[in-house]
Amino acid sequence: MAETRQAYMQAKAAGVPVQDNAEIPVMFSYTLAPYLEEYKLTNRIESYNLMRQTLSEFRDFVKKNIINQITRLDLLRYKQWCIETRKNKPRTAANKMLRCNQYIRKVLGQKPGEGLVTVKDAKYVESEPVVYSETELEKFFRECKDDKFPTAVYKTLLMSGLRKQELESLTWVDVDFEEGTISVTAKPGFSPKTWEERTIEVPDELLTILKKLPRKSQWVFANGNGNRYTHMWDDCNAIAKRAKLAGVHPHGFRRTYATKLLSSGVDLKTVQKLCGWRTIESAMRYLTKAQSKQVRKQVNAVFGETPMKRFLKAENKDVAVRRLGKGAGR
Image (cartoon, rainbow, N blue to C red; front, side, top):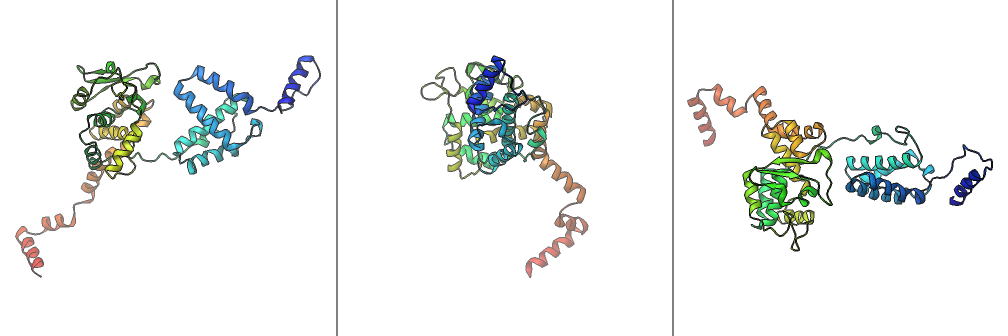
């Protein structure tokens, strides 16, 4: 196929009549590297890494070097494979499919909307966010066994809503003990999106915890060598295992943070700003969970009280007590 394309180009350059509407094969092996190079130069490093990993995975999955032969069905099957085999969340699988479509559209010279799949094909049902209960949090932090470092790591996630990489990139300059804030800012090796850069008001309890940490380097959370601490996920799994808790991971503390804010009456716009979400719809996902107890109280108020309360309220108190006493003596 490479020879065919080269011969076509040479013939065109030499003025030899060729069929212009003939479909010239476009191949992964020739287009992937330059596409990724351009993507890296025009996007954040995190976005580049996601694109590179996704396209490498898709190439192994589809097993077609000629991009012209890739079909809409291939992309839809890839999305389903990501969910069923890779155990990706539907949202992650949909985004990976769209990245592949973006690459295909670019190298084939297609206009927006002319790709094999559309945003409609990427629709998914957003599952309700899982948050940690007070009991689960108590068990988790009990297993930190008074170790200042892991306690500080996961308390920071819980009380500031930082993402994993945001916490790993937190410097002492970002922490303002006087104003009681933590700032998410760009720095070498970390480039948050515009709406992710923010200043977060944090509670006094967290500031007290952070003050007790040793200052090994510029990083608030540094390993023994003073470099960035990057074992948050593994350490979280180990602590959760000791606490006999299932499904606990670092991002869950961020979800719990957002839910707690909404439950306490903080408005959606403020929660959006504190969490660094681009749209208010992201904050709205947590609203149902946050309002659950309040709604249940209202439902109870609408549909009445428990049978025992109705009984005590309807009967004379003394009569009710005598009846209960007779029942107990049987």
